[in-house]
Length: 173
Ligand code: FNR
View 1 (cartoon, helix red, strand yellow):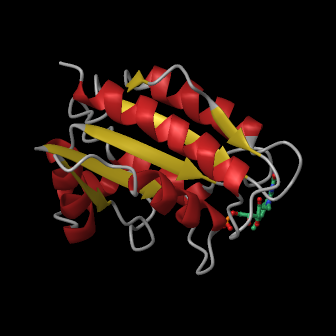
View 2 (cartoon, protein in one colour):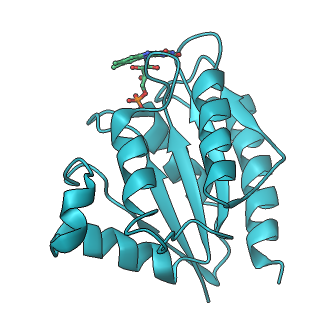
């Protein structure tokens, strides 16, 4: 059994990105179980918190430890990644020396109702993941433009193709 953790970069109730994440995960093979890493309740990271037990930090760190791979599906906020997503990226690199992203398999999808599909957020995210030593899925890349809660047949097929590549990659070694 493989454990996939997924992170939705949006905190919004009617999130297009959540809808896309759910579509991708519907394709999961039977030997894969997926669990969400919730990020809405994580206090903003500061090094001062390294001296304390923060239950929500413990929760997400444990989820990351047991994840064989992570799928991140995120919107773009002002040409970069949302603050809540940056927060968990930071939380899981600390305390110093306990970087949970190192060598972790991570796949990235960005989506936007706009024309550019959140490409700036996607590129920024990949840059950060490289800096923290993650094993990021290089291709296929998805920056989904004109994204909406109605996934049409063409978009659905495109996401299904991505899902097949992702789960195939997760199951390798
Ligand atoms: C946005 N949005 C946006 N879209 C985009 O393509 N590029 C951008 O730089 C931004 N910037 C931005 C900033 C902030 C603060 C918000 C709230 C929104 C629009 C965004 O793509 C849209 O709200 C999506 O619906 C967000 O995805 P979710 O939350 O529906 O998953």
